[in-house]
Amino acid sequence: MLPALLLAVTIAGCAQLGTMPAAGPGPGGFEMTGRVAVKYGNDASSGRVSWQHSERSDELLLSSPLGQGLARLSREAGEVRLRLSDGRVFSASDAESLTEQILGWRLPLSGLPQWLRGFVRPAGSAAIRRDAAGRVSGIEQDGWTIEIETWREGRPERVRLLRPDLEIRLVIETWQEGAG
Image (cartoon, rainbow, N blue to C red):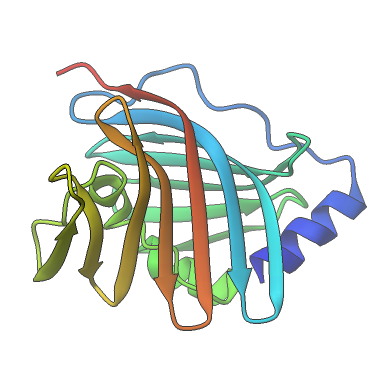
């Protein structure tokens, strides 16, 4: 549904969700921007992503390739909210069930902060593959296959997240670790 959502909102035009808040992600967090491509069933779409993550909160903005805000996902105090550019707001206790309910597929927000750093989630079991340089090249965890295609400056740059009938590709353009 995200591909359809991206297409519908791009065509619809004017509504904007704004920019990311100025405050940093806090201890143990990060800020990142990049490109995202989603293939779900027969639908495919691409856009931009801006994400601020900390242990206490998340603020993730999905935009069209031209930068128009399409959806904002926020997590704080045990609640996850998804605001669409048409003003509709949805909430749930976790991002996975909320995105599945609204978009039709699960965004793995609980594992993504670790996977985008080349680590496994502390909870649960995982299988890890390494490349010739000893870097993590693949992770199997929580029903996801995470393929780290390229590394830059000691962190993953191109990442594919795979589940049956779903592929999410991320290209990380900027990354800033939060202050300790």
